[in-house]
Length: 361
Image (cartoon, rainbow, N blue to C red; front, side, top):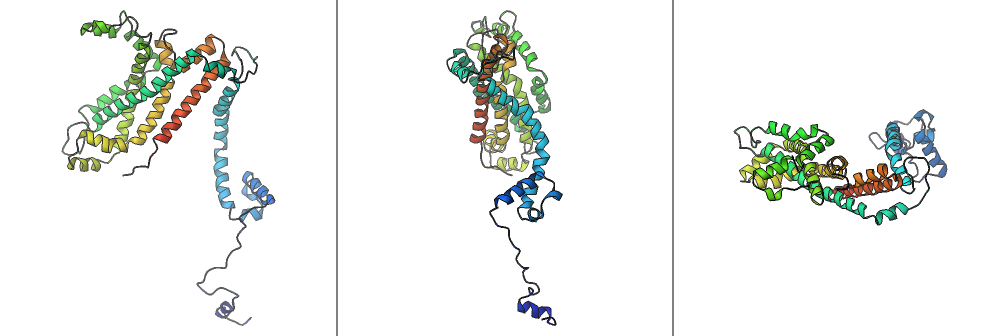
């Protein structure tokens, strides 16, 4: 067929007709042999120019090459994270099974003895109850106040001609006032509120006396059962400004046309909030709930500075007491492991319970 044209050769089956599909390529087998697996594993760890040709031209190599780029790009940050973050957690689990004092390098492996002691330690359970109270109440109160103030500052004012919604007058100034506690450290906030709760010269007792509520005055605000509520009030006060600014930013991203449509339908402020604002800011609220819960579990600074010794304990303060005052670092590490598990369970539950289909607008 040397003198045949391309059309004749196509008809004879030697070449595809013009415009027809290209010849089928030989596909690599779906299952790899043991030798091929070793070659792919080696290709993942070696540069492309050192990759064997039989692997380089395989259809699976392109995906492997993408994963290899990502893996090598993240290898150094991942190594730093493993050394500085994951490694201390692993060491904590190990030392929680020893009788290490924290003041020497000598220790004896004791197994789960520290955890059995935790189970029978009434002081540990008291501190756990206080931490769980803060974990439940602090996010609920703080986020509710943050949402209310943010909504009033963003959409609670009178309607203007050029805007569908507007905040109350002076909303920018109020945001600065609410955010001011975030500028102060928790230690300074604790010192300030310790003076406010002082039974002799504190503003709280003096103010109650001025308004005629002498029966409400107390000789010890930071002792007994009332101490946890005082710490809760300070915790909420110190963080509510942060969430006012956070939720205000989330609400400002909602298109004004949605509010205009709601106003045309006759929706009031409460309906607008619960049907529009809250659903469209739910992802921010869920993230804020997790962050505030972690802050509530880490109320060490407030309790350690405000509350007298043995007046009230939370898990971080009880851990500090056992580690540095009693020299029981192994037992304190077991308390830290319990705190870690509580935090992990809380975060996972919030991520699972609060998950929903994403709302787009």
